[in-house]
Image (cartoon, rainbow, N blue to C red):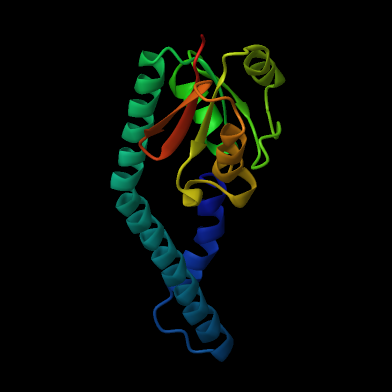
Length: 176
């Protein structure tokens, strides 16, 4: 875009910079070029305002994710199942100290971009489960909490301990 944008804007700018065209066709070209340039400027300004207005929300979400990662590491949890939108950000931000397998809302493997991660989690019999508490944080395809709650209700008492951390519900395997 940075390379092609000047090539697209130059003919518009050249046409729009004519001051008092006399011919009808030139006048239409001048005013339409000015309109298009004004629309492009409005779009760029609107995009900039939106981007800057999102900064506080994104910073808060990043801080919340960092806090959750620190809490998981502090609890000794290194392998867990979670939704697609959370998994790879946890892996990346923790520098692969946390490894997760992506599950869909039925708790089945789904969209694991790097299959060895899922294999590592699947082979760990002490793996935990982590699902967003708020379905708005994920897509319906990955809203795993209702299914996870049903699955954990069928487990023997004391096998998993439930934690609510920020906007996530964690079921940690409790070794005996």
